[in-house]
Length: 141
Length: 141
DNA sequence: GTGATTGCAAATCTTTTGCACTAAA
DNA sequence: TTTAGTGCAAAAGATTTGCAATCAC
Image 1: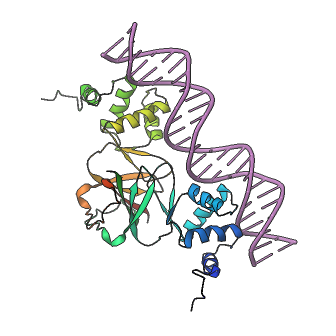
Image 2: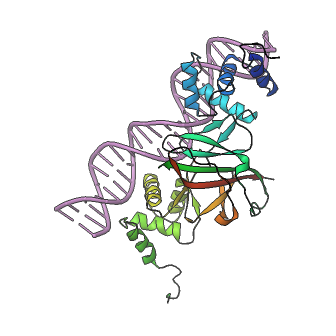
Image 3: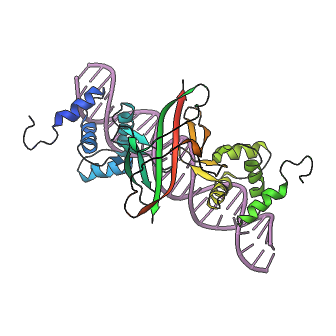
């Protein structure tokens, strides 16, 4: 049973890093807690760095970038390309898609089963499909 | 009837610029010819600038960027976001989607009617759908 | 200890901008 | 002429990298 007053034990994040083969340093643990303990699903390097600073966690922006990429390579995060100006990372690594509100930079999930990709042509010779990304761009009415 | 030996008369590109309200300068005409006279469908600023240079057209990279954006705003081109590292522009402005081969940066069209988006949730409050982009990421087998 | 990780600052890369110059109407 | 467009070089952002200092094991 879960101990009282402990929505998500420290060790859960720690084990997650261990399982990914990442040494659980102070910075990685702190960022992982921000990311996986019920926080935002969608972050940019800049936004995560701000949240860290606000939470009194001292991490350099370079380390945030490095950490986001390490987490992505390890499968803890997923990178989403919706805007040429900056990279987004998503803590939801299940099959799904996105609404993207360009004016504010906000992302909203669309469950994977809400979209049907039918009758797709064969991929270019010598290649195979790695992932399908659907971005529904919306604007202020 | 089309004159012999003239796949696409100069005036067609010229009229296209005029219709878009863009003054047909030497640079815009040259770039428009490269873009719309059977060339590549998908370009980056860098690739178009290289093609221009190779064709002995002297245009600065800044002008290529400006021109690509002016053409996009005027509806002559469409911008495609597939890679956070650089912007792609597509001369195909009809409804369609893309295969994207990350290793080479190559894009390939998928006709718009090959993809069905069904049962989409309502867009975020106060917004309406502007466009749906599907990117099928493929990799070397 | 010792090898991985971090922080900082500098470097890099794409894209935008300011401004004097040039060309289209 | 008069105003829009161009080129250049410099600026601006986002991201990365080199390297000495620091930390996990």
